[in-house]
Amino acid sequence: MKASSLFKNLEYKKDKPAISVLFETNNTKEIRIAMRKGQLMKKHQTPFPIVVEIFEGEIDFGVEENIHHLERGDILALDGGIPHDLIAKNDSIVRLTLSKSDTVKRVEKVVK
Image 1 (cartoon, helix red, strand yellow):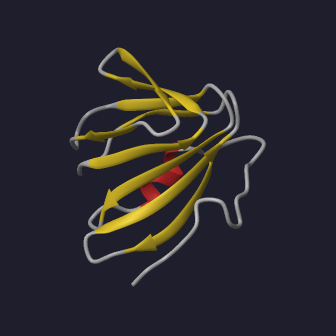
Image 2 (image 1 turned 180 degrees about the horizontal axis):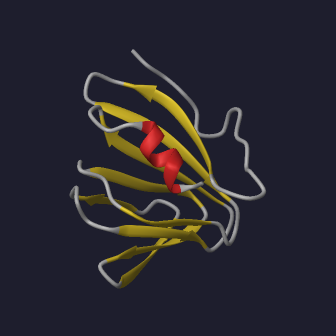
């Protein structure tokens, strides 16, 4: 069994989103992204599918020139190879599920 908390040790950064690994399973990596209002994750893509859950707050999620307004409780799946970006409309906690084959370093590069 693996367990973690989206709230424990929660830290927001002033200048960029905060990326934390919650845990890894045999197939996935569970990531928490803490974003202050106005923070951006620039356009990027992953070679693997992802799942994004808005645990707290709200974000605009851009995909293929369309903006999807996501609020607390919304969840989406996105295939690999699709460019997307995020901007926090309020302070937000985003849970990101990555493929085990993907790297956390790739996500961290997006926020630099």
